[in-house]
Length: 454
Image (cartoon, rainbow, N blue to C red; front, side, top):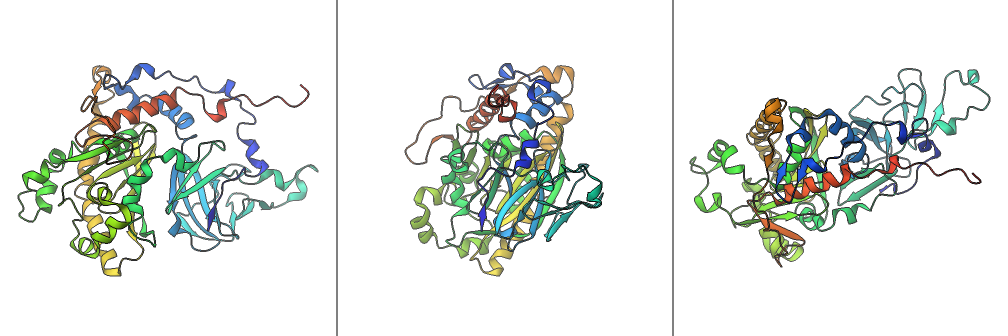
């Protein structure tokens, strides 16, 4: 199995062919809205439709976005449909077992080409007029083709292919920018923190079951930022859930509530927080008993087993998040400034016995997912923020991200800069990177080079 890292067909030249950047919307300077030095964020970044539209152009059209897990593709023709920002895409395995991604839009009249969530096929055939495309994106069948002009060439009307696909230990990411920095370089030190979930098993990981999907009222950044930086909310927001989950029914012990820990702060907007208390382990007893911790220490190192492998949280900028303790991986699909569509998978180690995998699955469902006792708390907080954010006075009051200012440092234990567990450091870094991208022209905004000889 491989992924595409190439310049796709000439059909991609159609992107922006009839509408250059000079005809696009005016961009908003967000410099005054994000003060990461002072730790203040303007609330309008969650509500302004113009800012949201600019995010589609300058964040989601140029960033590495999570698509799927490689275990979802086993044979040629397997496919999965998802989104990159608000652009629908088909992810499929071609006849050479290469995974590719295409804009899920017929080149004829633009209808959604594939309407199924997942499955297997030999061709993608449009239900509107019958144009058919093969697994390599090539247009193969055009009903009544003889009625088209003589210079009509099916090769010119292949599917628009996502130019960059890259895998990191089972996770598939894609980027519309063909000249984007390589995925592993973009991840940087974040790979160490991801490995504490993705590299516990020499055989790798796989997803169990299908994809859980649900909608929330709120801006996508509220969710992505919380998973990057916010352990602070746990003891308050999840107090009732922690009581239910504790052996005594009275909640976790004081030393666990006040757990020590660290928070990784990436210059590329990623973030990860994790306790370092020895009892912050897998809450599913069968999973905890399955692991050979000495072997894990040899494989990952003591610091990783004592930190990022515990009950932590993390976000890969902009919109992929995960929870290592219960194997939850998810994408925050933006659906306008006020709505998120959450897609979540259950991730397990391949070599886990079936009963251990099932224990992880059940624990995941009890805690996170649409019916999870922790998940409900988070969604309520985000929707409450969004519900009042359109108020004139409310929208003009800055939000406080000052916790832990100046605490970022290289601690000599964990890669990159880290802060205290209770800190807004990764949140400030998330918005600093967001602001940088929002104020920098993207690949599609640069004028096309003039033809030779002009």
